[in-house]
Image (cartoon, rainbow, N blue to C red; front, side, top):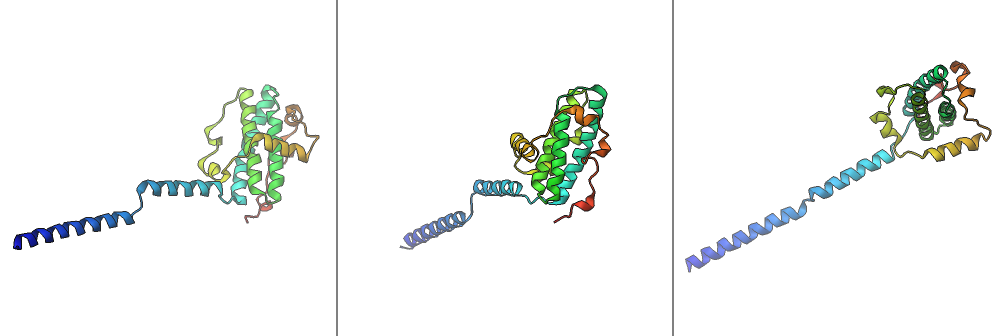
Length: 190
């Protein structure tokens, strides 16, 4: 009888131990599900990152430097593809948008302007410096990119007479263009 009681008690103890362990495991989330939640939150944060004026000003300032280099290459080699003119017009429009406190849209136009400046440099036998490429901070603040076609349509809608001829832009002194100097006092960081 004592033996049966001991076996019964040990079985009962073992079963209760199993139930306690299963209950503790049931309360913990699976690590895989947690990773998915974290990744989803990161993607959401990047997509909806608040763009402020300082971020956009930094992007535009870096784009201005690339446009100056592109202009020098176009002046020197005279290969006119229209890329420099597109870069200048998108950058001018970006500056107008920034003054209207549309920072994200301005950043997108400045992004396209830099890409066009890269095309102008390449077509005029130049090389793209790695420091001009978009860095992690810029990519993070830009979030989802708007298509080039949509941005170009927006640009043409504001000025239907716009001309994308490099000859019209490269022959001018770049200091006269709005894209070169951007006064920081114009952009209040809100």
